[in-house]
Image (spheres, rainbow, N blue to C red):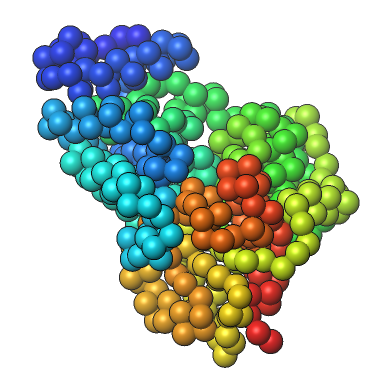
Length: 392
């Protein structure tokens, strides 16, 4: 891979070990995928923040980088942690877990990476259309490529961190227009009526497409949250990182390989995301983290109702959105729910909270929670989730 004179100096260690290590990570990645050069990026989003999923070994690496004084060269943010910093989780976990989690966040902060602790960084700062990014959160990658029109590969945590420190990424994969062309045509033959059904569609397609790039026709008037749930689920069950939604198939896609999704296929995909039918200990929405409109919608659904005494009702979002949605947050919490920031249910300690059965409108959560959290899951629409969580 060709390096500029400045990049050669970094590679040779003239700017210190941390930048040298970061550049070597990017060069190794570029060589692996036959990239010819590094290209500048607008932003980086780093995964690997929750102590539950990260554990101890990577902390030493982060500490070594931070101790050199290395700083991110471009706007950089991080994924949710395993704890909320308003204290809901604190009384349920041992002291060393809290200390380790705080240390991870502090190390990223020392490197100039903004601790937004969200999987929806585009609600904090929206990247420009056509801009190149290095994002590691799979749901954000699909959203950036498919909805925002930005260009990013599905980075790992270390490569996204390396890109943050260097301000560049190898020019391969979805940074090249020829690799963004659709190669399969999906025909949705049933009407999708909820964000949960879009999520079920995403899980079904992820399993069947693996890493193909689809044009998805038959999506009549999808909302932003519908496309977000579709993309998050698509990335959970497969490796697709960009899709093209449309009402009717464009001419250039008419000759592509076809896959039809009928009502029965979608119904089965929806039902397969539930592992039980029992009453939930927790009802959870906000994976990916809720937008302002989603928080507002939940507030409308719970208005005039009370959450049941034996159920935790969590709505997860970023601090940024929570601050903007203060009035709606008050309504949700007045009903007995909790609007939680900085974490996601998937990467926190649900069993320690006493959760055995989780109900959610997120297909991504329903897909991951049985294995990552060891809980049973009921998958349902947002309206059904609120109906189950609240007294009538």
